Amino acid sequence: MAEMTYREALRLALHDAMVEDESIFVLGEEVGRYGGAYGVPKGLIDKFGSERLLDTPISEPAIIGTAIGAAMSGMRPVAELMYVDFIGMTMDQLGNQAAKIRYMFGGQIGVPLVLRTQGGTGRSAGAQHSQSLEAFVMHTPGLRLAMPATVTDAYHLLRQSLTKPDPVVFIEHKSLYAMKEDVDLTEEPLPWGQAAVLRGGKDVVVITYSRQVQFVMQAAQALARQGIEATVIDLRTLNPLDFDTVRKEVEKVGKAVVVSEAVLTCGVAAELAARISEECFDYLTDPVVRIAGEDCPISVSAELEAGSIPSPGLIEETITRLVA
Image (cartoon, rainbow, N blue to C red):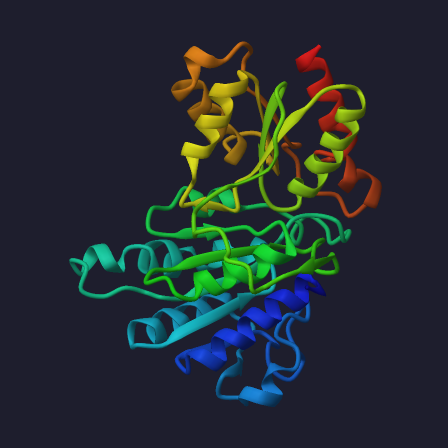
């Protein structure tokens, strides 16, 4: 067992993968000498040099375009975008090229790149640097999507992403980087694409991912003190989506709540709620409840920012009303 932060686990995953596979290199704004916007690749340039820690111009389309060309040529690039908010600038390269190339070329070639980026709230970074845009990625066939909520998954999901033959978007929540956990990296990780059932309960099933896993677990502990026991599912990856685990747990309990930091309308929570309603209809005793972000730009005010996304208190209150 070793204590490490979420940031350190990601750095170790990059380090270990780069040692094992010389085709892996990192590119992005200030990923080399500076060490990345949030310090994940910090220090790796000292071991691997500037050819494998490549500082780029401030151009997200150039970063992703370069990564796609390198991936098609036999390399395994790890492209870092400072914020997921900038992913819209790359959607021709990412959504129209990287996601489609295997299909356009009849399966003869893939694009084995990993796009690492940071999303979510918690740093008063304002409306253009605080969004949760995972639905953009989840909506695009051909793109895989991983969103680790724990230090252990930060390591293992990134290592697994770096073995995939097609593009993986890997979204790290910026408020998790300093989170510490005791980690045993010798333990066999969960398979890629499998959700984790973090706790069992007879009263309600709560499905969530990324930082909201931490908030839901806090709420579940508070609910347990009231005698309400919640099953908590961490999806871990949104594409592939392990709906089999969701279905199994919902069918046992009959009540489901979906929690997401992204906006309520047309978001991940909406898709999950729709699928649960369709596929578990005969087992549900109540409508599926969504707890999600407000449909508004994120404020730079810390209080307004915190109030625009689900909190442990809101999750606890909503589930109490559902179960009562």
